[in-house]
Amino acid sequence: MNHGRTGMSMATAVADLGLMIGSVMDARHEANTQRRLQRYEQVQDQLLAKIKSQQADIEAQRSGIESLQELCAMRAKNLATAEHVIAKYKEEVMPEWERVAGSLKGKMEAARAENQVLNGTLAQAQADLAQAKTDFAQAQSQLAVLGKDLTQAREQEQAAKRVYYDARNQVEGLEQEVQRKSRSIDTFQAWHAANLTLRCALEMQLLRADPENPLLHDQELRNRVRRAGETSINMSIPGQGMDPFDVAREAGLSFSVPGRPSGVQVLAELALTEVYMRRLAFLHADQKDGAWSALQKVQIGQGSMTAAQDLLREMEPQSPLLHPSTMQQVRDMAMDEFQNQQRARRSQKGPSAAWSAAVSASQPLCQRAVKGLELIIQRASEAQSDAA
Image (cartoon, rainbow, N blue to C red; front, side):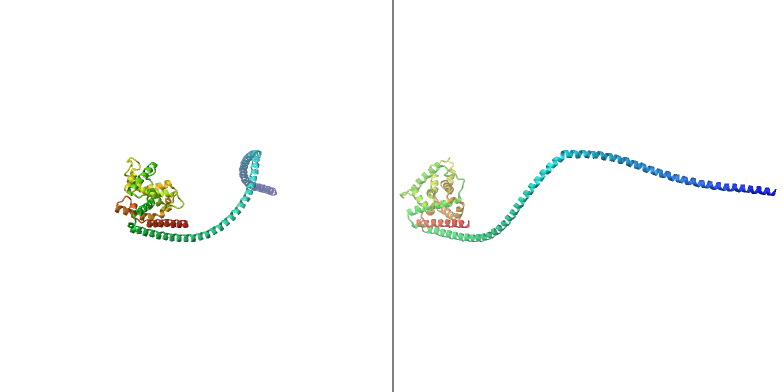
């Protein structure tokens, strides 16, 4: 019994031990199961997160694929358009471009040829420039020589001026000598010298001309002046037995311009102009005549030089007496003579300053004075020609 009880106890103990072991095993299994479940849940969560991430990536890739498909479609469309444009370009534009390219090629060839010609022209121009520089250097040398010649010409001009002033002083001395010896000549010589000196005075008075004076532009007025002058001179100096025109013409011959025969008659009329106009103011002049106011000026000693200048310009327009250079050369002589005549006019109150100054003049001395004037004008003209 004890053995049976012992066996039952052991069996019970074994069963309990088995139950204990089973309980322990179940507990371990359950713990392992819990751990596995937890691990599984963790893995499941990781897988779910990874699946979600992959799904997001797939969605992104799908969107990218769709965008790429759209881009490919757009590129295909653009490619088709480009192919169409290229085909149209090849069909329409390319031939024109080929034609233009051919034309440009021809133009380039022509431009190359022209460039070669221009290069040749440039070379020639450079050669011409070098020659021009050489010529310029020679011209500068010649200019230096001409400068020396100009200096010499100026020195010669100064010498000519000194000769001119010396001659003028000689003429002034001759005029003073004429005045000192004027009372020693007879009536005929005084008459001839008066015409000569009057003519010289009128020549000089051309320098003081008034271009607006209307005297002697009208032929009828000139005829009246001539007739009145003939009468007045015959009345002023009766019984001389000579025609006043012959006397005046003889005076003009002594001072006529060489090579100009027509100047004789001009100088003859100039010698009578002042007397004619003075007498005309008291004879048949009409106060309504346009020349009346000018004649009134003549009566008080004005205007005769204008009439003489107009007459000379009308009858001999090429006369050197009308040339500005000649008038300038005799200006100083004329001014001195004119002032002397004006002083004589105021002191003697005669009909003409030149007439009054020469009534008693000596004919030889007057001729010497005239020759002196001619010599001065000739030397001044030569000096001017040399300077030119």
